[in-house]
Length: 499
Ligand SMILES: *[C@@H]1O[C@H](CO)[C@@H](O)[C@H](O)[C@H]1NC(C)=O
Image 1: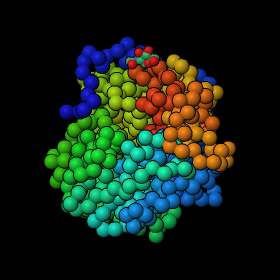
Image 2 (image 1 turned 90 degrees about the vertical axis):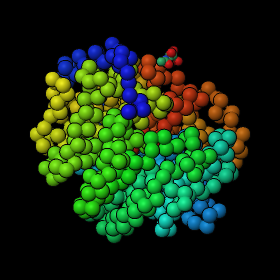
Image 3 (image 1 turned 120 degrees about the vertical axis):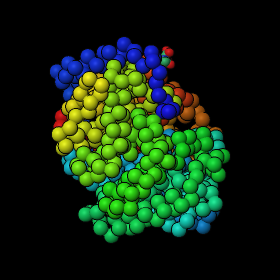
Image 4 (image 1 turned 180 degrees about the vertical axis):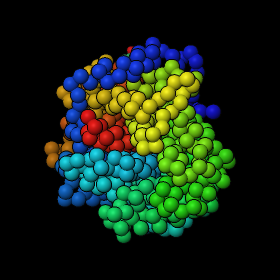
């Protein structure tokens, strides 16, 4: 079943027992004795997205060491594909994780926007819009979705600033003959979720997003297939759809249901629940696998008493919660000795933030319905789920064996040599002359700290023994990504309002 399902006895390290004791002991044993400045971390987590911007930067750009870049993206295909986000420490615009990032940023605003004080709500909404403005361009022509700009081999062959880029900016697309229900389904989800964000703020833009979401979802559903079949050479092994496209169809329908309240989407979900394998891999949630997210999102409808035909999704969501509790069930998620959720495969913090986001979102849905999760003969209250989520956030911010914050620019100790081209090369202000493809290598190899502090970037994080090399070549540990930060924005918003 689940790709990363854990097998006994590896699932029961001493850490699990430790964590269980910690949970049972409750708040007074929390490691964060001094408490964290969640609001400061929230502000930084959103600011990070400005450092990832591609295209022409606006005058209110706060990350000033970044400049315009990739201003001709799409030109080779006769379309405008400027804008959007670089996914991580390279200069490629991968549409699949960019759409997922936009969906999760939107979900953060929808559920926790009211907790974003001091101007951060506006900043978060702008971060969503930087994604959706691009996704609208990528879906501007019926029956086509541009899913990537930048040849990954060409890009990865260079250590170059985005502002200097001379690598191949190939625009990759899917269409009826080269389907991609995965990336199209996720894009529909992102547009639908963002339409909720803009519903009262900018109704015309919201309608545009929702109309587009409906069209893109129809395209995704009618022409079924994985984009990595036709675009294997461009998207694999980076954002290959390993998990299949079925989950993105359910995910897209779930967000369209939430955004439109139309019956047809609920009927689609119920009709396709089995064939699209809704019960698969209950404890996975990330750019490739949406299952736990679908279950939590749809559970809200069930818990509000609005959709009993979706009951199975709540049963799955409960099972997901139980799988995260140490010592409860046999489909355990692993924890490091220091208490961090750990899944194999690199860039572990993506799992930490996305699973913690679901814990927190679900705990709120449960609270409103006055409900707790039953795991065998134990009961998991909403408060327990929040403590689990907070423990993960606190680990990220510095409550860990190395006493290091994994968010750049937060706290006294944080990663200095992140795997990120723009951060590690001198800025255009400091070094106006071009730095060519291979001329960047000496900055990559240098033991010195990065010259540009990419404030708010959360890196891949420590290995399963809580060790962290702080070294550029260790990209699985030292590279930040947009989809690590997107769910963290929601978590930090909540904890900044409920410290
Ligand atoms: C984690 O990294 C440390 C330091 O590099 C190393 O000693 C340890 O073996 C690694 N642990 C695992 C499980 O890879």
